[in-house]
Length: 320
Image (cartoon, helix red, strand yellow):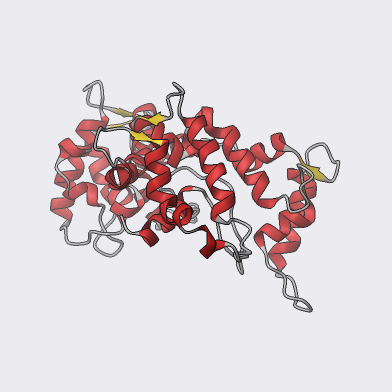
């Protein structure tokens, strides 16, 4: 792996952003592969396509005819119907949607695995990761001495080591596939969520007091130019901070309040989407979908030539 590609990957892996944002930054960890678009009306199905197929798949293919689309959708429906009783329940749809959401995580790990598994033993040690990612920096530290970036390699190295050790459940400083997945995508694993919260706190807490106050909260989202006006949304976010982020009303967010902000647990996107799909397609209102009901409403599930079909419809069904 090239030096600079390694540097790029570490930036992606450690959730860092160099420089201040000029547009609003969203720290909330949404379900994988779901856009922030909400259902505005029953004619706009892009959110449904992404939830059912995955974002990349739902936006890359547009060559199928309606007949081909329905045929391949039918094969997907057979897989969703886990108990083969001829009905797709909300629970089965929810499980499928969660599977689609998670798939990109494991595909991402598969794409970069060989870059880090230097000795090809199907494990990635901390030393291998450090060499692949920080090798150039460690060999040429003088080139980085003048760096004023907050998230310099000097700071990122111990931070990555801390995260690697948190993901390394057996403590052998060697990551299996699952452990490395937890390292690269900690927001997807319960035992890694403390690390996600801690890293977020470290990113935003400029005065180092262990809390995030309102000014730090806003500064993380918006780089204010001296003398320039604040966008309207900044005022809304200030209200959000005081009304919903600072739960104990002490003027700052502690780790638990940060957790509730960036890792909300009060809304299950997959459950809501499954219920929506059932509600919109359940003609006989028995709270379940037959294959016929799904195929009759195929455009909601997989799109059209106007809105792009999903790549899942072109994959061999054994890959799904």
